[in-house]
Length: 101
Image (cartoon, rainbow, N blue to C red; front, side):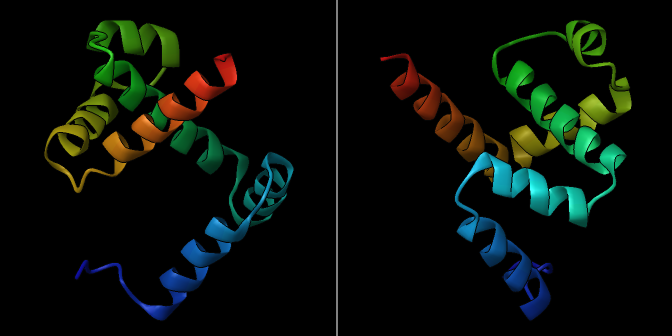
């Protein structure tokens, strides 16, 4: 079991899983997080996607504007983490493929 597992985190994640639209996500996350926190999470996910697509650190710095230290942490999680980034990237890619058809 992950050290994060507890009732409060379960409530948070179950709530996120039950949101049914982008608008609901925007509303919830705008209430839950600061704008900077949302942009930081989005930037890390952008970096994970770009790393997964073989982009260099410098390309990511130029495109996303985050530090190489942050990119390194994302890369470590992408390579050696629990698989969350890989799973999310795969699901996003699958959804984008379906939308393209």
